[in-house]
Image (tube, rainbow, N blue to C red; front, side, top):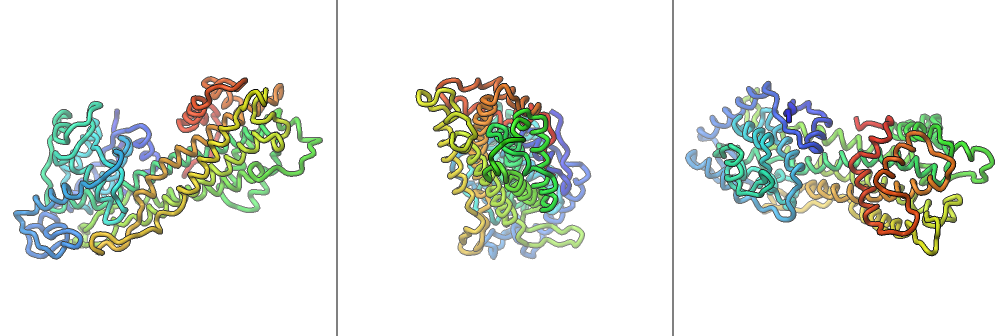
Length: 511
């Protein structure tokens, strides 16, 4: 597989999404090598000098006042990595680790970290040859860097820890050897450069963003199908309504739904003589809710993209000024805020989708659809409990959407007295996306069932394509059957992008 070239400070979301979804290997643009090497030379010079420089010839955190002899700097950095390998919990998914490694390359590429180019090459070769460190997913508070998870990643580069290679989990040194690679000895500041950064939190936030945006696009398409299922009105999609308010997401959501419903015979059948004056909010206010969520996701995307391209370790080498300066770029507060925003957006997308499901299964509200969307209610329960499942998932996501960034606690003997909690704030997004895709999968099942009850009237041509894609995997529910398989398949069609691909329709883009 051809490696993608990363341009530090300029790498777009599309490149990072390819790393996440397709596990594409990456390499830094060679143009950044002189800056990387200049910073490394400045660190080597400081290490040989007598002046104390944090993390170069001193201890760390509360121990920064302890001066380290030049002969001990390599041991200092090795001890740092080994002592900080304190992660617990399930291992990060492989693609998430690879994204984290790629983000570390981007940070090094800014030429302010002081690592040797040899470490850049080793990271790149590990990505190219499929050596993936085993990294526990819990243990970071998102300040002073994602210390524990990044230490587990770094341990493999020095021949410690564990890594996956060729489908097996091996000791780090053995995994490198089988891939034809050699571990390196850490030089001055290099261990600190690896672990003082936000790449764990940022990787999970990026993954959450990518999944949330795909879910938002799916929600527009599935909501359009639900609108036809309950014979909802398209009048609230009139472009003038949305231009008068002016929010970009709302305007785009309404336009997408208008386009998706264009040519629906179901819609045309009740333009005249429909005694209903207004639809419930979950139908009528879809552009306002989905559009607002899209706007929030775009705001979060700007923050996370900036962070992905940033130098976030400490201290930083300011080569032009000839300085090595301690700061706080390792504090993941921006990522924490962005993760909370993504969580809120996912929760709301799921909340309104769940209300559409409830609408469709309720014969008092669904405009003549049978109870629970089964042709033989009573004998059959149809989608009754599928709706209950979505209520449970919706409620769970509401709880998960509570902010994490506000929950600081002091650590490291009060030296690190305010932290971001961005790590688990971003990590929860994976679980929320899974829940949301299940909700949207059930809505897809309900909407398809509802639209088919409107036969011989047909929905629009693009929505017919989505319906055909669903029915290629999941048959119409004629009588009760084991439902968990249907729900899992529907969720996979949503999460994989298969429904979006079948639509072949223009939907809003993230940027």
